[in-house]
Length: 167
Ligand code: OFO
Image (cartoon, rainbow, N blue to C red; front, side, top):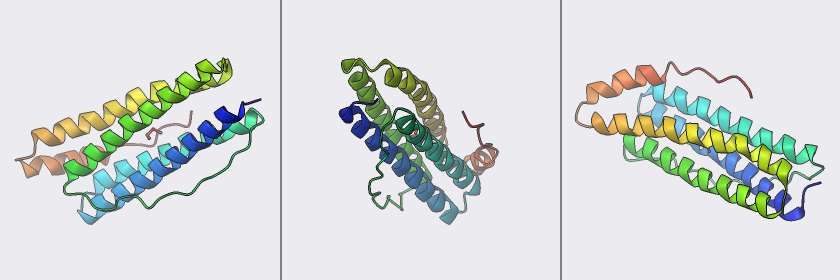
């Protein structure tokens, strides 16, 4: 059985993952508007991953006899100054999610909730990947800021992303 404080915090994280889904879908739409379809596809797949993260938490709350309660989602930002600005915002967002996950781990430890601690370890590892993949794109975009041709090469590369297998 989940302690009520933990249940509430996991529901909040479920909401944050759905907000991530919504944000990345908004970024996908922004890249579509810039005719960067590869970037848009990357963001659409990222949005799908975020939905899968949300469902992982949904299932865990249910499995532990908790109650899922969905909260409101704010409208995400829809415009950015440049392709780099949007990806930098994605990286910042992932850093924020990482700190949320770390706070959840601290709470699970404080409550001696070993099952939730173990559950969250998947998210700890996932956040390393999430930050690394966003950061790699940001760094490359910075390098090619004065060479717009590079943007189209990157667009092709990002468009080759494939959906990751459900975990
Ligand atoms: Fe769910 O990892 Fe991104 O936000």
